[in-house]
Structure formats: structure tokens, C-alpha cells
Image (cartoon, rainbow, N blue to C red; front, side, top):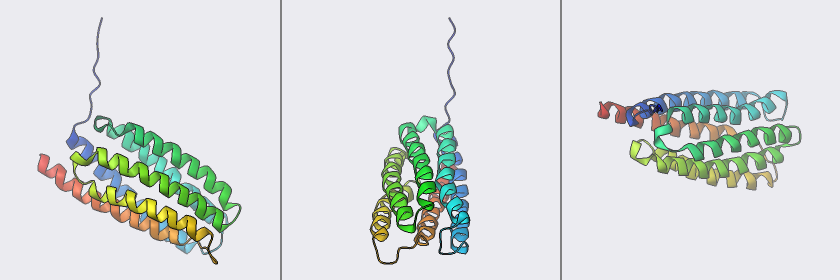
Length: 188
């Protein structure tokens, strides 16, 4: 009988991989936010596509994260995040055909649930270093999500606040990437 072992990435390799992923996520968030603001304040086809693309990108990023960090055991949280983001993409596609309050409600529900998952994943990765920005981002996402849901019931709801949310999330990814870069250098 033969046995095989699957090589698991080291904490250093995981930190390097996450750093790269977080830098890409920062760039995507900033570009996405700029495109959303440039698209205007009314729901049209371009805005609808942008609204669906953001959670789909989150799914792709979670897949990359899952593949690169198996040794760090965030697998359940990442799988839950993938499912939530896929549901959000479908929900946002439907909501974009309706109205701005529907978009804000779906985005808010996604922000709340994904923020809770982000908190859980970041806490399990705490020993890797560079996770404080992700912990803060998860908490802020929960609060922002509640704000989006509340905004949906307001007098003049607008989806442009989503650009600020994405940009802030991108800044947190950048901060975590910079911290992980220092951690990776210290481990060498």
C-alpha cells in the first residue's frame, strides 16, 4: 500500500500569496469604485453589470485564497464566503432590474454576512500577522451593511455610497498586504 502526502504551503508562502491577492483586491476595488461613480446615479446596464461583477470577483478571490492557504484552515469560512458572494451576485442582478432600494438591501445583507465571515477568517489567521486590518474591515462591513439597509428606506437612496464602501475595503486590503509584506520579510 502506498501513501501520499499533499504538500501544504508554509505560513511564509501563505503570507506571500495573501499579500499578492490583497494587492490585486485593492486595485480592483479602487477601479471598480471609480467606474461605478463614472457610470452615473441611475440604474442602467453598466451599473447592473458592475454590481454583479463585484461579488463575482469576490468569489474568484476567495477561490484563489482557498487554494493558496489550505494550511491555515480558513476553508469553511472561505467556502461560506463563496456561497454568499454567489448569492449576492444573483440577488444584485435581480435587484438592479428593480430599483436602488432593492440594490441597497441586497448589498447590505451581503455586507453584513460577508463581514461576519471575514471577521471569522481573519481571527483564525491572526497568528499569520497582518490581520488587524481584515478584522477591522469585517466589523466595519457589518456596520456599513446595516447602514445600506437603513439607507434603502430613506427619502433619496443612492448606490454611490457603495463606491466609498469598496474603496475603504480596498484600503484595508492594502494595509493588510503591506503588513503581510513585513511579516514575510521577517520570516526569511
